[in-house]
Image (cartoon, rainbow, N blue to C red; front, side, top):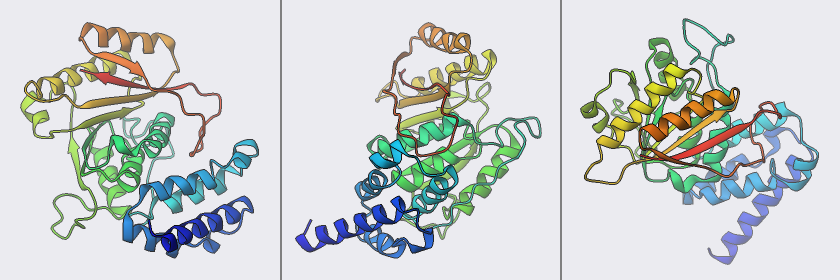
Length: 296
């Protein structure tokens, strides 16, 4: 980085830091300067540096700003890499139209935080998300981690309808759009029923990474998830199997135990990712979260 460019970046970081610590109005932040730098370099390191200077600043960790202020700031920041509006349509009811997929669950926020801190897991790769729900995690990855392609998937028609709407609301184009921005990831919304999908259908996705968040809500769902992971592994007999990350809230230890037991029966190895304690999104402080990395 040239000295003058480095100095400009440092000045930008200081400006964000001072305004955030003073809880200044969001419109006073140098968003246009940030957008210009990202257009020139698409530097995800810059976004992480801004997070370190703002929501993850030691003062903010010790004396957190209001949840509303932090949420509004992150919503504004997350849209900058591709310059679209960040709006998430979701239901006000936990269960609506016979599904829980119309609201954002806590593990989706936790996985989005992990992804923002670990962008290399997704950069220039094809990502398949199982049980995407409202799409929060995928939208964060598309905006902040620069995947080559992203496949949102779910089985409920109302969830799929809402997913397509949220993709478009956030300035991303679906793969069928011939006017799609080539600088953005190729985005697909796919109907995927874990119980009936076949190996050939899964082979068409060719994912490098598979993720899922808050999908371990009952024994039947766990068995179905492990089954689809086995079929995904069967797609890759002559090449490397995709990396798999499953995030969940530990609500019932027996449910978590069932998941690891079923993984063992299927011959799928797992290891827990280190917990990250610095929250970027608002969810309950006392929730126990986990992310397992699976090796089919």
